[in-house]
Amino acid sequence: MITVTGHLKTDCSALKKLLPAEDILTFSFRADGGGEFTVLFADAVTDKELLGEQVVRPLLRYDGAPAASEVGARLTSPELKRETDLNRLAEEVLNGNPVLLWEGADGALVTGLKKVYARAVSEPPTDVAVKGPREGFVEDVKINASLVRRRLKSPDLRLETVVIGRRSRTTVQICYLDGIAVRSVAEEVKKRLENIDLDVVPDSSYLSHFLAAKPRSLLKQVGTTEKPDIFCAKLAEGRVGILADGSPIALTVPYLLVEDFQSSEDYFVPTYRATFTRLLRVFALLVAVYLPAFYIAAQLFKLQLFPVKLLLTIAGSIRNIPLSPSLEMLLVLLVLEVLNEASIRMPKYVGMALSVVGALVLGETAVSAGFVSTPAIIIIAFSGIGLYAVPNLIEVTSVVRLAMLLVAGSVGTYGIVLLTAFLLFYLCVTENFGTPVLAPFSPLVGRDLRDSLVKYNLSALCLRPETLKSKNKRRLRRVK
Figure 1 (cartoon, rainbow, N blue to C red):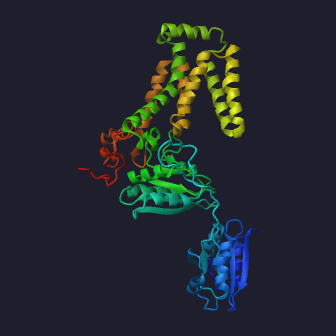
Figure 2: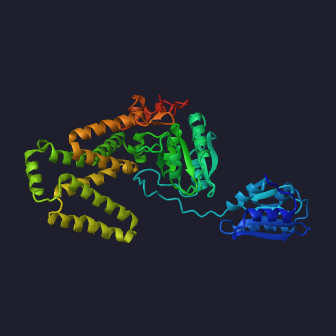
Figure 3: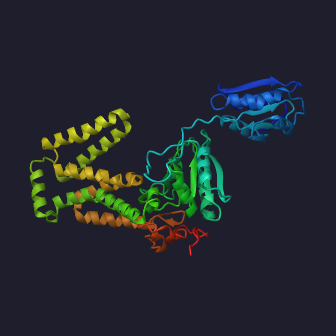
């Protein structure tokens, strides 16, 4: 460990060797009492106006002893920290916090004068709610932590900091409620994060890969959200949250599959409406995954599955189609995926024109030319819309839909049934941080079913989910 020597020129030279970049600036000045001071700071990420007001100006008339406590008493910065390790001082400079050195110093002073560039707190585009809070996380971890702290004004809220990334030195905060979250889960999360040896951590999605028990699993194993109210509600249930600097997406563990069928709006509407919308999401997802596969299987192997009138209509539509049902459906699905990807990547002012060209011109022309049939266009369009009923599972369900199409075109309904059985078995045996992903259905936890696909009223949810194994079980006192 290289420490501060007290010789100003030696310490400045040592820090400049650690920080040779041109945007690391030094500012030297002499106080009225003769003391020599030097401030090292990063030009782009330090608030130089506050540096002059809170550090330089108070010291210009300083004539006291060169001790860290005496110098610190003259500064007006609310964030001061004494540090002797030059490597730690270099990290602070890179974080935007200026470092103050002076002749005869027994330690350097780090001032919290980082300039924060962050967009305003607004409603997240991926989780829009008609009722309820509209605040969303931003890319600054301190702002995100303040949004959490504002909702959980409890001394039990713990925010533990971990720095990850050899080059990026990304600040990651582990959030949990002491006494509610399982301590072993929080310790395991911290252990897995500290074991990450990565150059750069640009987003929290990089961390989810290392938090997963099975990184190559098709099913995601870490929950995500962009809304502080959802994040705090999950902490109150006993989960552990992760906030990463530079990312507006927060992570939560343990993850349950049923979370993605729930919405924050479900808790601000009547229970019957919340139950209906949750079941509707399940129905939409099942139709999106299975409808194209059953359509192909019925055409190739089981025509009697169609009603007679519908069979005659389909037969008339596919009479002159040159492609087989499997190739036709795969082609339409591929076109839909290409249009979807293009509409996301293209500029917004071109998106509407692309929708018109893709949906009307391309689709209508393909049907008129006899290249694809009308039922195939309708089924794939309805399937694509159904996937977005559960947006957090689009990556998984789109792959499952493709797999269903392939087995349906190969072995028909038997393949669909076998693949479904395999997926159910896989879901039943998958767990992360000791919690089954398919809970509370497998294993069956009767009490937790009250807030799963069916939503009970608030008075029936007086206990925390049993699946999360929280020691503090009661969250609502019964009203007599």
